[in-house]
Length: 162
Image (cartoon, rainbow, N blue to C red; front, side, top):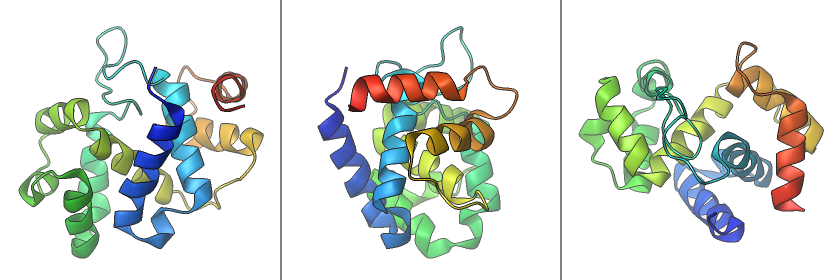
């Protein structure tokens, strides 16, 4: 497994390029916890040949949704995403899911950014307790139909972070 401290530092530095509102301590901890729960920082492809990629198990369709419905209206933020990930801006303007599957699998910062933006788009305040984060993750990231559950989130995070 990757060093949790190094991953926290990478998440922090990546999100800080996007701006202060994207890099709060609560946001960094939620993105870090999401990686623990989604992949234990061991997997960059969804088990069972599913579409999700990166330590945060971002589906290419979710990345494209972030691009087409959020970043497209925020050109300066899109430019910061390109800078933070070292991925050319033309790719951040590309809605091809195959391209994004490839980028997400090969670029850690792109996974961090898409995870963070997915959470940013939630119209509810980000919680700061593990239990609150677990419910937030289930409802807004893993989704109601996803296989994960809040109890697993809490157990996994406590195991790796405490």
